[in-house]
Length: 214
Image 1: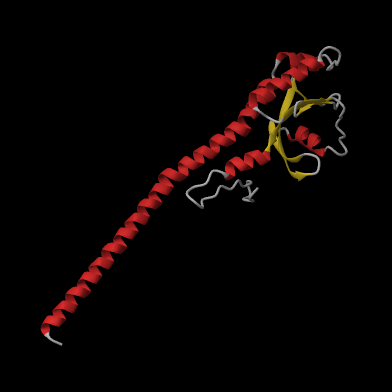
Image 2: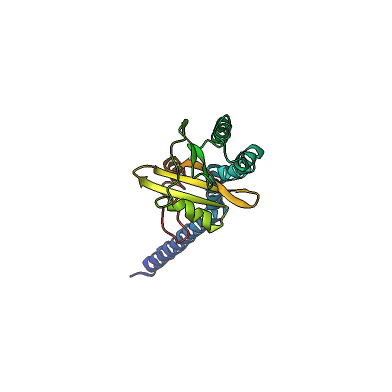
């Protein structure tokens, strides 16, 4: 092979090598930049949006229930033995206000003294149900737990469907008097979270404390 052809081949090989290095460097730089943008900007923004949604759908009603349990009328009504005549309408109005303010499916008060439900779901009042502690173990479990707030979750339940109940302890004169509860539509909540995609394939998962996808 002549010296000229060898030089041409050498130059071509050098050009190919340099071009390959430049392409690989640019690709690495691009991926690094995209990764940095994803980790430093897009994911935190997405997490903030998800937390904002959770706060609006769950924490706001929980804070609202706290105010409701401290309502002076409710406290006095419980002290007086929770009389029905002429007073139960006021209790229902408190529940209606909470539902309208926080856009929940329903709300209720469950009494420790009488075991009576004062229930309002989907705009319908129900005063027919009482706690059966042999079956409604969630009530005694919440009472005995000592916690101020818990969330009871049902998924595909034959009675409740897919819903969550935020339960807030009601204390009168330092004693457990029952609980206030707000009903949340978990299916609608899950749809909102599922719509929060990152790019074309980035998906949002809600997990329990032990890492189980809910």
